[in-house]
Length: 320
Ligand SMILES: Cc1cc2nc3c(=O)[nH]c(=O)nc-3n(C[C@H](O)[C@H](O)[C@H](O)COP(=O)(O)O)c2cc1C
Image (tube, rainbow, N blue to C red):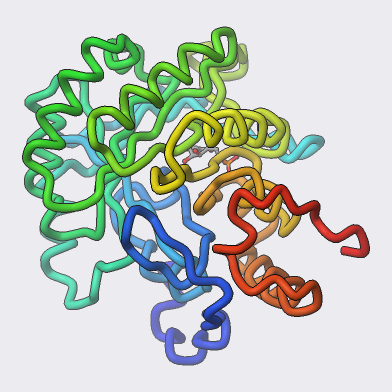
């Protein structure tokens, strides 16, 4: 992706500009609902290139205060049979200062880049939040990586409440919280979502990768992403939309790789989606392909826009 920069001008056709695709995260408008999920560009090397390839927005990170090398290898596995990925990267990051400099140095508008931030204590996360907020369109707070044990502290509602109160009192940009899938206790996820909504945050990402044991990983456990997690994403987005206000943002993340996946999530109440594994398995044109199909299906089914599809429960047209 880095090598594509000289060709930006020629890639304009990949950015489908059509009113029907306009999407909103909080009150901010994006050209389409397809986002690049956190993790593919941890250190702000390619996010802009993904936007040039037709993504509506991109999440850079997860960024930590200090440089971090992550967990020992092997830490990344591909299972081609079911188009999944298992990882135990554990937040390799160039660290806040380096990434902040990159954000500040580049004379490129960052009005479609979110910074994903994390850390094990409130002070560290707050530093990232405070220093990165002016440079990006919004902050995605990651409390859900399955490979970093200490993050579970923030799954406790009192700790989460305390953290979000501090951030929401000081924020100048939308704050989106990326939650764990809470596979065993769906209700835990529902309670976390309510806590995020009550705190005044703009929305949630549902969800991070699913905790899984895998003896091929050096540390023996990690997170599962890709096709096998899609049904859970859809089920939880649908449940959560029924308990939150319609102006609270839900971003669906987990197993999204086709136009039908995106359609069903939006019809069930997602405002937008984020894709990681789909980029790995389907390639970098995935956002262009989905946006083009969405636009055409809207046209032939007399649906005016993403806004009209949102929460409509409209089935994906069978001939596609
Ligand atoms: C190798 C890898 C690294 C990831 N790193 C991060 C990360 O740094 N921060 C984060 O919030 N999510 C991270 N994720 C999770 C993805 O952003 C995404 O939520 C998850 O993979 C589910 O989406 P998918 O099925 O489209 O991959 C990572 C996922 C993978 C596969």
